[in-house]
Amino acid sequence: MLAKRARATRRFEPLELPSRLRPLPPVVLTESGATHDMPMGLWALKWIVYLRDGRAASIHTVESYRQAIEQWLYFANQADLYDARAVTVHHVDDYLAWLSTRRLKPITVNHRRTVLRRFFRYLQREGAAFSNPVELTEPQKAPRGLPRGLSLIEQHHAIEVLTKTMHTPEERRDFALIATLFLAGLRCQEVATRRLEHVDLVTGTLHVHGKGNRERYVPLDARLREILRDYIAITRQKLVDRPVVRPVGADGRQRKCSLRIPDSGYLFVHARNTHRLRRFGEHLNTKSIYLIVHRRISPIIGRPISPHVLRHSLAQRLLDGSGDLQLVQAVLGHVNISTTQIYARMSTRAQREAFAKAMKATDEIPEET
Image (cartoon, rainbow, N blue to C red; front, side, top):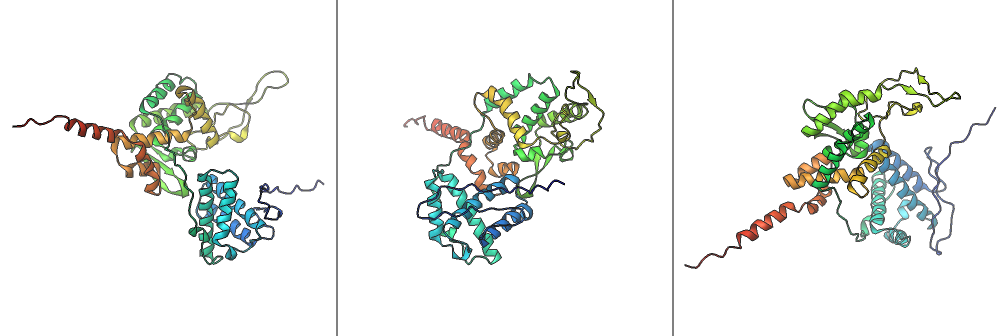
């Protein structure tokens, strides 16, 4: 019998280190909890599992934190730091300086610092560290660019062009998907995992599970409600009822498959017109959504457009129309209002109007009596 193939583990690639640190084998983290000669690595693995299972962090957040903490563990390994209690603020400063020498942007270095700070907070709670040395360091000054959304003219132009190209079921599905991103401001993962029961066309709300499994109800614009009603009743039904087509055989003919696959209930699904059974009934993943938005919107606007740009567009539109930061925070699902405040720097229309009104009021010089 063939020997059972061992499960491959993801190995952190060796990094270029300063010459004063002697090279050691890289750290290996596996799902089974195996590490090489580093107790702090065991705590790191427990922390990552805690983020994934205890905090219900998104897949992308867990992966980002895992890569960042592996980078710290590798640096600590080179510096002979095996115990979290032995880490001082000087070690953290050396680590951040080392990251800067690798030509990482300040915002990336600050992200690594944030991950390390949260890791040591976890160690403090678990009694594995006496203090948090990262708290004594200062983040680097990083220029924070404003999120660039689409202007109102660009939004209307994009919707107008897309409306004229809705012919096939796939095109109408893409239009409904883009309209949901435009008018509901969902994240990629949020719109990908929406199910039919999450859409309430009667009350006009959309039930969303956001980051950290936090729930919110997003109001549906009247236009979006009509788009989703037509999509669910007509277009989506055509997509899920399509017959399965097998690849071309030796005789050059395609054959319909007699398999009957139940409807999974996701809102935006793959078209059932291929022989790849693993995709039948599955929702569109984040990569598919990104490609749809990029392929449909970018040629119209004339620059690369991602789904998050559409989210920024809704935030800017809501703030321009209402000036209410709490409304934008509730719709977008931000935990901290500080995340939403960046859009206040984008919204200048109300400021321009107030400035023009004030200047106009002072233009007239009163006549002396």
